[in-house]
Image 1 (cartoon, rainbow, N blue to C red):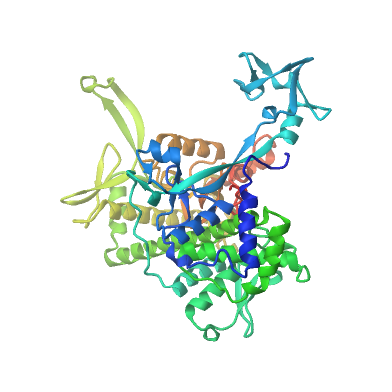
Image 2: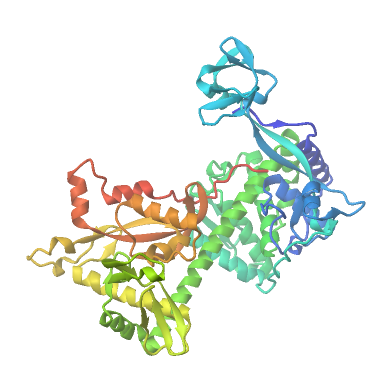
Length: 597
């Protein structure tokens, strides 16, 4: 792809010149009381899309300078279309927006159909075709492209001549408008002290593999050991000073190869002062962004020594401040995602402990399990729920066809409250839960899950299985000379999928999903070819599914060993573990976002 192109106004040069002038005057352009921002990063109030890179930095600075607490912005047209208007005398803030310009829109490119030059109108009805001016559709393969005396195929031109083009747009903060009816912002949380918040962030990064040590003299990040070193807390003038310094060094740690892979960390060279200064610039802006997101002040003690180096770097390259802001934004998003993942895990752990404590008081899962089996329900390990066979009869007088003797399996899917207690509902029968007068449906769902887990544990123990990452970990002392029945041998296969699918995958409850997503879940299960999962991991992580970043969980499938053995014998059949690997979305440790300014 060709170099990026800036159209008309060169906003990057304008802003870089302002930054250089400030640095040459001994001022740090981004030195502000960032803790004044409490509602997150600047974002478009109409698309709800966060601004990134240089736009994020410059809009944040504008908010601080103007005293705006609302991070929502919009263009003049967006505001007008929403029923509002910009106040008289208000001035907007210029930002960059990027798009890909197809090569055939360029004036220095000629598209040929045979020997005749043609004008392309746009994409055709299929990916292999284009529509020409006049409405005629032709295959891309028959067209040739001329540029600078060279002739290229359509595919070659797409790879080499397509450009990313920037355009300058002006946006206004909602505080500069009147007549807009927007959703009120949630109340900002001012209750968490800086040292408490940074302790949570530190725990999240420790969970990510980062280590922390003590150096009595200085603070630094050592890439070779993936370790942040800080003096003891008592060596700092305040807890906030310690928190800000720790956050600054965590910013450096995000550049490690196993995280975001930033050049200033991956190929660190203390002798290369220019490269070192560029990395410090990224850590500085990271600290400023994090201060805006969390209220934690950042360490300003050493940045004066880099002012001249930053000024020189910006003078050499007008794009440097934009690249630095983009890298800093990615680092902030990475750390906040890890913090959120930790909080989700802690909340689930606390919920699980609360369920165990509640069960220890009355132990209702024992009576529930007995009530289910007494009512003829059979536990199914793969679905991790209870099933029952029914003989259905539909009365034609009630709108259905009259049939006799047709069997159908019903599963318990949810629960509801009654004055007599909780009942588990499956569509044809309600199973009462003893000793639950006054309880909520949520409690019934937990009891059902608890009973299923207990029953699953008993089932696995009966089969002689310990499910550990797809291996049969049955102790040798527990294995007898008498072979187990073939149908009893199971192995556990683990596959990653979106955590939001948990209820649909494990409990077969699709009520929390839309119609299209429920269909996606079923299609995904069919592709595995190994049935439905029996459990979902408590811990989650940030990963990707079909290219989209989402919260992921690990699901366990119990697969008959004979199916795995048959797959190994017959090359035409994929082993379940092979299918699992092929279907498994790639875990992404970094946010892996493009440079979106």
